[in-house]
Length: 398
Image (cartoon, rainbow, N blue to C red):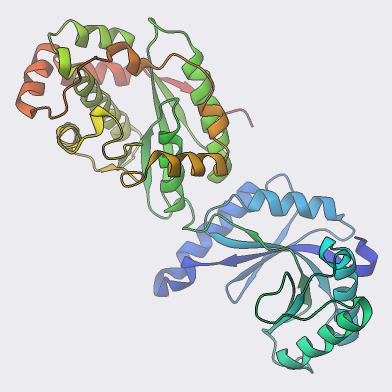
């Protein structure tokens, strides 16, 4: 695919939910443009927005490999529905046709005689051809040149042409974006990040709803190794691709777990531990201006996630606890973890601090009054403050 035959490579971004925001739309678009620029800080780009489409122009002479890298990177930014690697050509029907022919010639579909359609859109109505006329003109040339069959209802190859104010964009590339809302438009939350599969997916899902997410990991140190911290760090590095500027804090939780074990909690140990984690997370959230906690709970998945035990945990904090996976089964969560690139990291072996207090007969319907008696013996409120004081910050390498 040669730049001289096709014009200049660029990247087009299509917005989705943002366009429905009415009078608030501008603040969402401002945030999205800032997020795009941050994500592409290593590239030279000229960002221009028109009619719900963001065009990313690259310096003259930029190769398609750089445009590919830009498209791949920006496809991880929430708020964008579709990403197109496009070619920017002059507003001349003959030039547009030539670019379309060259673009089709370079596609694998042309070699195997796949069916095709041309879809044109005129944002500039001054263009001398209507969309239907442009479709017919370019489509006829493709059919005559390559003998590809036309299929307007369900084509295997779609040639898209967008006539804009100053240029025409031609592309066949159609890769999905993350959708959702721009990170930062819904406030800030704190995710309780284990080394498992669920919590990273929960954090990602809240990013897609516009929440900027910080991360809190509870380590069993000094009674476990640092493996879980390395996993948490690796997970945050991966999730940072979706929002940038992520922050990770680690709580050395082992001694607190030892206190819970000796408090006579028995079958309630796991729920008592979860409540102490939430109280600690609440303290950290207040210090860093987060207004919600995020967990990877899925109803009924494990003993601590029965309806009664979830209710018992909710009463430990005044902050809202967001559970975006609550209605998903494990296979759905695994599929999403694989798609966003966290599954392989989560499957690495480590010593999960939660196993320290695992019981053979865990309580399925904990009573809040029983948990409060345990917390009174632990002085849980003060212990949560002490744990928040002990957190260690881990800075992500750029």
